[in-house]
Amino acid sequence: MFKNVLIAEDHESASISVQKTLADLGIVRSDYAYYCDDALTRIKKALLGNEPYELLITDLSFEDDGHQQKISGGEALIAAARQVQPGLKVLVFSAEQKAAAISALFHELEVNGYVRKARRDAQELKKAIESIYKNKQHMPAEFRQDIRQHNAHNFTADYTVIIRLLSSGVAQKDIPAYLEQNQIRPSGLSSLEKRLNLIKEALAFSKNEQLVAYCKDKGII
Image (cartoon, rainbow, N blue to C red; front, side, top):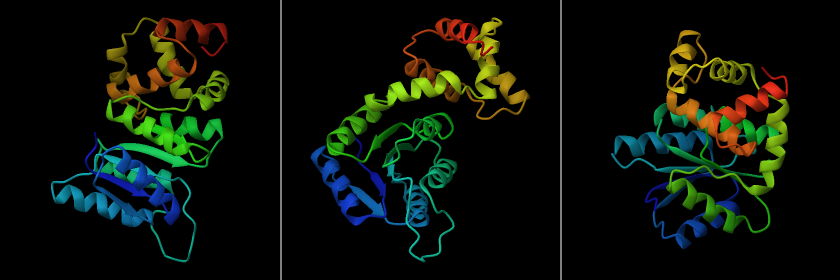
């Protein structure tokens, strides 16, 4: 299980609740920050001290209380943290419930999991942390159908390019070179695999061939 976790949460009661959930999982070391700038500073210091955080649990929305900040929201914090520590795993714990916004977290920021603040969220947090520790993505079942519908009608131009390449017979391992050459980011093979796996999961497919056939049928490519 994770040994070093950072919580970025501006509500004290929520932070305490998350800390208790971590303790229930046997995670004895968990730090917290009420501001995004402070969270990023902690991540940098942990790296310099050779004790990097393994998991960042962050909210998306941070209230403006007059404390001047360079980073004002969870999305910006995730992006900044990944620049400093690319391998940092991220779990978003938020009240956000729009399928498009949640889908973007996985597609654009490549978060490892999402849990919505709601009834029985402590149990969902435990499931998410355990899944992420096993290198699996965690998306609550309640959102999968919504995201499936969203993805079915909102393929980005980048996704269309990737699926068109697969359709034309280009091997998945060769696609990153094309993306890099055409300045399409992210272009790495790992990122490509995560993006494809996420959308296949949302559409309940297991193979790229099913995804290509679906896109042809829907007129996406």
